[in-house]
Image 1 (cartoon, one colour):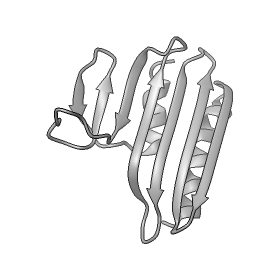
Image 2: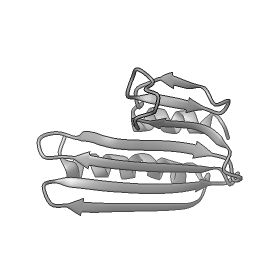
Image 3: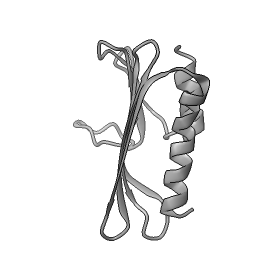
Image 4: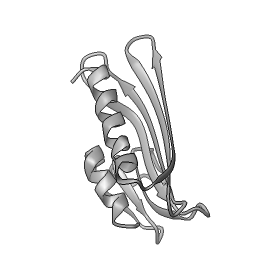
Length: 125
């Protein structure tokens, strides 16, 4: 998948929230850098004022490689509902990709497909 195809697919997925009529606002920023690197920042405010924030730093030179990512869903008060990310922890978790749960637990979890992530968010509305 090319960088253009990836970004288009991401925009289409986020657009589903608008199609369902459940958004207050969507902010989609895409910064293309030298060497086929892309920084993506998305913020979706839903009708219950909960917020989905997506941040990706991608190397698209040969394939779509998500070097760093964080997909966070939280309440209007900033209380975490869940977050997927691949940030290093100290002490080490013993795995890179993980999910933070609302109760503070951190579990091993790969980042789901964007459409699966949207389905997960919809369960909380």
